[in-house]
Image (cartoon, rainbow, N blue to C red):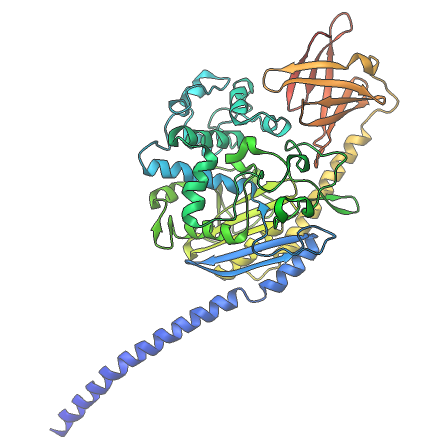
Length: 541
């Protein structure tokens, strides 16, 4: 009897103890998780500050999201170099091509409503759109637009001109393709713009209105703008992407109503310089002028981490998110960004619908950068860990946002302990040295002491291309100047013999070789600009 009582007593004790142990274990696990969460971002603050110095980035803002919570948010540095105004979580930056994912989401919302399908022909919704090849025009789908596989090129058309969105699209019927349809990865802003115009055609509101009503409003993104008109007077903005603003200095004090925004910066020989914001609304859905801050963009990232749900509200279906986050077009390794080149843990790089993606030591990364002259934005996701981040900076040529993404992702997947900033900066410096060496070789091959066949005045005149329209070449102070009316301007400098070189008056010169064709009478009939277009000479007025 005593033995039986002892057994019963032990059982009672055991059944009481086990739940207690389970409870204690659960508390330990939660505490450990919280501790790990804190530890994962330990040292990030000082790392960012040191990396900003190394990369010479004036200002930066970052937010990190885990599950449905913002676990890190902070601004660093200054809004404009040489001035004391600090970046904070409400400072506005251009987000560039990270806008593409919003356009894909807008399409996804209309797919959810049954108003269109990812594989609808483009001409079903915009009947007037044409490409040079009628077969491609007929076969082109919305999915093709969103994953960069059209092969048509033509990136300079909206960048050098002030044509509006529909006029840019109309003129694409004259752009010669550079790759077979669906055979090559062709990063193309204009095709994403076309997707945005389909959203407008189907929804009955402009792309801008749709984004504001269907994305900004439900997410509470009250400090975001689809264009920069509320932030700047026209006189303070460069009129096109590849335009300058000569004779005018613009700073944060010129922003409308004292807006809390960052100024863009570009490198010069002795450091960095501030440049004006610019009009680029003609590719708005692809990443023209959309402006935001980390407070608002964190909400957008939370929607992605939540697979279409934000604060319990379903805004976009899980099926649409899955389409956007799935590979649609393989990106060749030769096109891999410098921070992923020769990475042993990376085996593929692909484009989804508005997103880039790759593997990394067995984990899936989804991300996209947004570069507008003087700004570099980044949105990144680590979906298996329910982690996301947004990084906004005001120095476009820096790879710092990518560096910080990898530093944070390594922390969450317990990746290798490495200094991404140091390693990528070394790669970047080597790449710049290669570029300088290539330019030096080109300059060394230049034949000195030669002259063009005709006096410079004989090359001046009006030239026309079906896509780019009429441009003018004038002789000014012993040199040739090319002008797109009201937009980009460039200097055509003699190189050697009958070869010239065009350098744009823009934050990046984009040198292109130019040749002039002569007829049997020695008259100029054509101007060929390398990689751009062949312009026919118009009769003199």
